[in-house]
Length: 394
Ligand SMILES: *Cc1c(COP(=O)(O)O)cnc(C)c1O
Image 1 (spheres, rainbow, N blue to C red):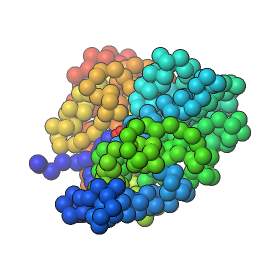
Image 2: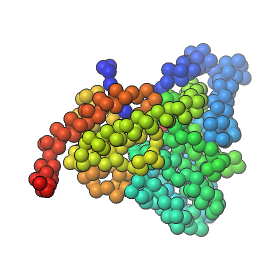
Image 3: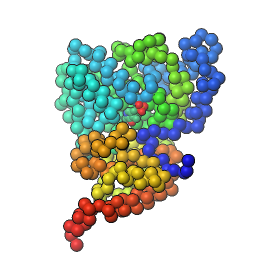
Image 4: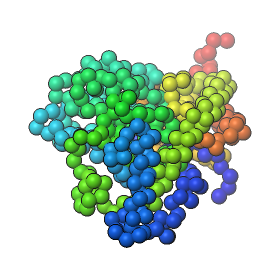
């Protein structure tokens, strides 16, 4: 493949070479079933437990509170459906937000069809939940609050501590979809009063198809998959040993590099944001200026159709996104941008650029130049833009 610039790290990341290296022996050499009592089975079991310990330590949890799953979507499904079942017959209301990932929103729609009442909180113009609005939404029958840690489209970081405190005050379970935050931001489940938390390896340079759900000890959340005794009977099926080993290695690397990586990504992200806002008129930054993921920038270019911009960037070898992978392919504007109160036509013109530790200033410079050219060209062909310019004061 030709050289390309990859700026879609919120969709997925490159598996780090050291992660691949850590995984390889568990395909070809130590391929034993982790339930086996012989040497290579024990080797697999130890490797799984080692990953569990590493990951637990990164969030201030105990190893027995970490349950490996097939990814973020599965963890989100498990948390919401099992929490609803735990309270069936006693409480039937859950609170979430309008800007969640579809893994949460579509699960909520499913639960609504099953008789659960769901409140979808609005967010402010920066994409942040207002804690006082959350508190007002609480009812005696509320059993769960599920608010994402950081948003995958606009990067906004939610007031998780305040939300956790509210949940604790009212004795309501608190789940957070931390798929974007885990590996990028420090998280401590005790300090933040988190009861359930979803994460996924492929968002932090780990392999695809493996995630975890943190389940606070003593929570009687039901099994997600019934079968063998794996994952303390709660998520049956032969363990994805190489994947889990890779997740452990990725989690370790992410924790070690978090601070320095975050600082350098913030510098580069801010450079990108400043250049785009300064050099391309009629552009807005979506999401909070600073309360956002270190690697996230999301813009709307007035008079420009986002999908067209993406296709033209792709022709220049630049991989970007208009928001979530799940909305691309459809021409619906992003539900997240609509929740910010943006009109349809601006929500349509959005571009998400998400950096990695490997992104260079040269790549950002090249990308800004290409965006400038393409936005200029597209506006040049836009009757709305022409009309707009005609009405500008001289
Ligand atoms: C990517 C993502 C998911 C889905 O995770 P998968 O491992 O791809 O299933 C869920 N929530 C958020 C916020 C995400 O960014």
